Image (cartoon, rainbow, N blue to C red; front, side, top):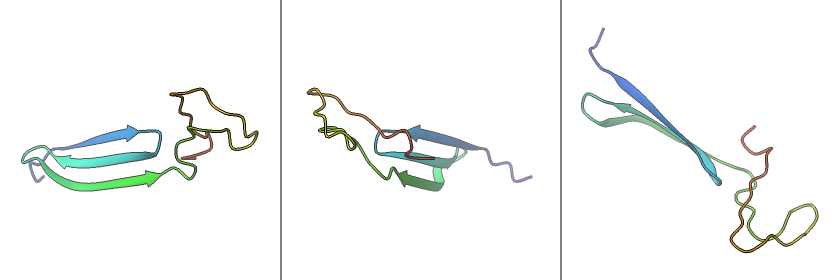
Length: 66
């Protein structure tokens, strides 16, 4: 046993999913990864219908990240 302790942080955002593995004994980032969603953020028009979204709206394709 090495005596090291790691923690994983995961964030699912509108544009991507991100993860980081940190060695909590010294704060060193052991590994990290980003998976960008294929469709990114939908903030102007709906892709299939072309319908305008209201101002300040943002949507995500539910098939992204699957």
